[in-house]
Each structure stands twice: as C-alpha cells, then as structure tokens.
Length: 202
Image (cartoon, rainbow, N blue to C red):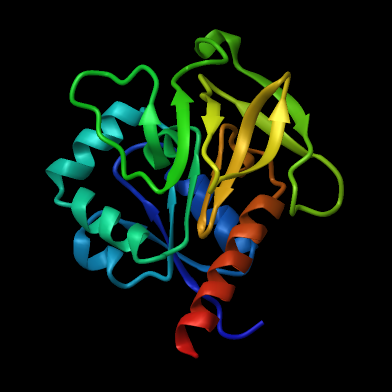
C-alpha cells in the first residue's frame, strides 16, 4: 500500500476512541474531527455510534453538517456504525424532532430497531467483502435497514434484517466492529479510502 490515508472520526459524541484504535490497527493515520477545518484535512471519515439525534444537533451547532454533506456528495469515503448508519441514511423511518442526516446511502433506517440498551447482544455476521469468516457484531440499541434503493448494495443481514450496506464510497453497519478487537471491517474501509485517494490523484 502507498502512504497511509488520513481518516477522521467525528468526535462530537459516541465511541470515538475505539474507532481511532481500530483505524490505526488497520493501517490508517487516525484523528478526531470536531471542526470544519479538521474535516477538510482528512481523506475519509467515520461517523461513530452514540445517540443519532445528539450527533445530528451537535453537527449543526459546530457548523459541520453542511461541510459533511458537501464532502460526502463529492465522493469522500465515509463509514457509519450504529448511530452513524442512521446519519448516512437518506431517510429515517421514525426521526426525532429536529433530527437531520448527512445522507449518502439510498436507504430507509429504523432507529433502535433491535431493542433497548438492555436488549443489546452479539452475533456472528457474514459481511460481503470481508474475508476470513464472520465478524462478531455488537448490537447496542441498533438500527436496521428497512429497505434500500437501486444504488445501495446489501452486504450483510442478521435475523432477516439488513445490517450492513454500501453505496459507492459510503459504508454503514448496524453493529459496532470497533468494540471487538477484530478490525477487518475497518480494514475494508481503509481499502476504500486508498482506492478513492488513488483514483482522485490520477
């Protein structure tokens, strides 16, 4: 691989540290992103788990929502886990008042679809594009994808529900691979960033 890509983690709320560790283990230079000028410096971005309504409101407050949308539209690779998946949905089935999304994946997402905090669970998930067998998915108040449009590709399902989706340079999972020590999903995202950066430089 060429020089390591710089990948940010949106650090407004949620499990930022775990993503930074996973990205570094997968070969990226990882850093926190809280301001538009920091966003402008990265090759790709992770939208972490947390509380999607809070992340949405803080992104607006910090002046990040529109720059985020612009960079995603321009093709910057982006990966959302759990709440981050909700942020990447073009439509939320049951949005909270004032909740906005970045968009980028033609999908309809249902918030907290797998249940409340005390109904969290782990499950083995086969993810298309990730070699080496199933990944261990940690589902915490996790969403699922109700449906996808023609442009979106389903990468994984669990219990009959879509839990991983990709559309172009946007990747999303209902679960938290950053909490398991298995960094293969982050490795897939690092490869996506490498490919985009290489193509962008040609």
